[in-house]
Length: 232
View 1: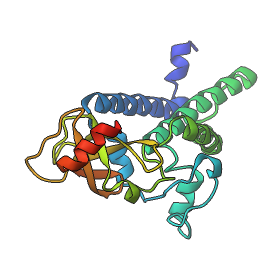
View 2: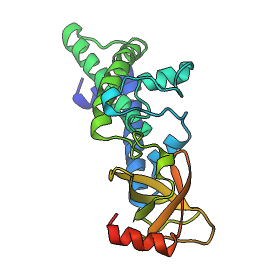
View 3: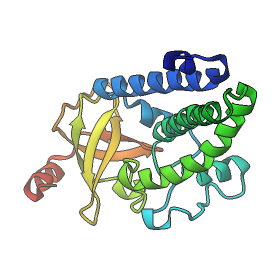
């Protein structure tokens, strides 16, 4: 069987399907970033609110996750430590590569491929723990944009600068804001009031949030002047 035939073999149909899904999700995510839509952030907003700890205590359970099967499973997989789409792409990639590698090994050793009903569960069993281990490393390299050492509530009332706009009530964008310790955070924002538009580099005041999406208004002149003088 040719190399092309190997990838399209019936025994490898689960891995071909996940390979296609991985490419589609990656393409959509890249397009959403270019358009400023933040697909990954939107997906995170609809997930259970499992707040991660710092990278030093990444295995610690959180109150939100404790006591629920779903919460425990998501916490074990490090959902919340990295964006969910990154975690999903990691899993799909590990499952796909692992499945094809398994079939290559079996084919080279025994001269035939495993049926998909056997190969897929085997690849799945390996992909789940590997995804967890991989996501632990990704949590330190590609952390979620919100920094949970400083809660979202602690950022309310602070001046931010739009880094990806324009921002309106219906079109969210990105902004950077420094916390009380001087650490810089990048958060999703939208206008709190209809009819307001904030362009890139505009100063805004964080006045509320729903999960990871902050609402902003034009800051009072006194706060805006102080922000400019401090260079925050």
